[in-house]
Length: 140
Image (cartoon, rainbow, N blue to C red; front, side, top):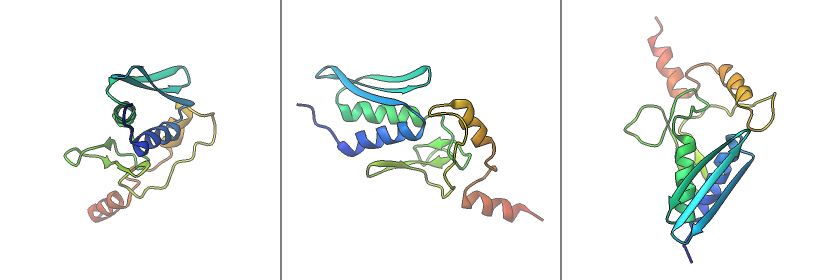
């Protein structure tokens, strides 16, 4: 039996749902080859060839977060060495490092990328406290 870290798997499924996925599947081809798939409208994001369900879930979460934009309008980063909003796995949830309010997507259904982009366009740049303070210090 392959060991599994429930928190990582649950956090991955939660993250995919928050990003608009209509479903997440984690399965195996054989005991040494696990995959994870997030399904969106007309698209599937797949990671394959991992040694455990935990590794597949973590790889899918990293793929979902790579090149993503946080609700504070900064690019998402998983490293302190890179600029952007630092996301961390906290228990059973991926959490942003900012204090920006969640974004509500009013129109469109789950996974509607155009509706998400319209909602993100309404967020003022520098939506977190640190960015607002920095901008305030620059003003004459």
